[in-house]
Each structure stands twice: as structure tokens, then as C-alpha cells.
Length: 147
Image (tube, rainbow, N blue to C red; front, side, top):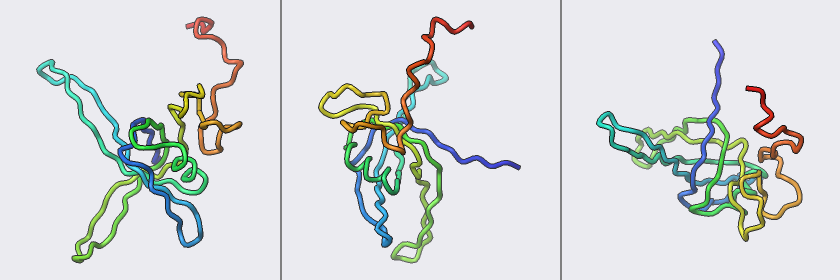
């Protein structure tokens, strides 16, 4: 049986990213995201729910997220879901799901430099390796698609 663990989220940060370093000096950043879902209830009324997700990123991805994204700003992330398990101070077993970020894309830019929504990198000359590249310039316009 094949296995697949991939998650994609688009939401807003609920707190500023917190950068720290592993004993190997690898950067690690932790942040929270809020993702909203709108739906229609059985009675026809509109409903909305918000899901709060803890996220973690490593290496250059961690540094970029820490440097360019702050609380309240949107971010698109791709990663994998992982279950963290630990024992609390009282000896109780605890667990929590967390998203480990593998790729991301900035959705807004600071200072209005105009690269919002295009894999923006807040003034850098080339997209970071961890961000998805923008679509190629030679893509045909939507009206040329034959279906």
C-alpha cells in the first residue's frame, strides 16, 4: 500500500515566528497559522470555523520565514504532518500534530515592492530555494486554452 503525507495551507500567522538553533547550529523556526473555512449549514445559514496549526521549519527556510513574515501576514506553506509526543512535568503522555514546512510562498510584500503573490522574496534578487518558483513567462493566456 502506498503512503502519502502532504499538506498545503494558506493562512495568516497567529504569532511572530520564533527562531532558535539546534545543537548542530541548524536554524529552526516555530510559528502558528490560522486557516479559515467557510461553509453552508444544513439550515442554509453560512458558517465559518478557524483552525489553528503549529508549524516548524528548518535551515534557510526557517531564516527566511523569520526574517520576512510577521504576525497577521499571509503565508502559503507545503509540508508534512507529524505527531510530536512527549512527557509533561507531571509524567503524563502528551501529543500534538504539527506541520513541518518543506516549501513556502510569500503572499504579500513589505514596503509595497510589488511582488505579492508571485513567490515574492521581499526585495531579494532571486527567489529562495524553499519558495515555489513563479510560473514561466511563456505560459499561454487563459483564452488560448482549447477547452
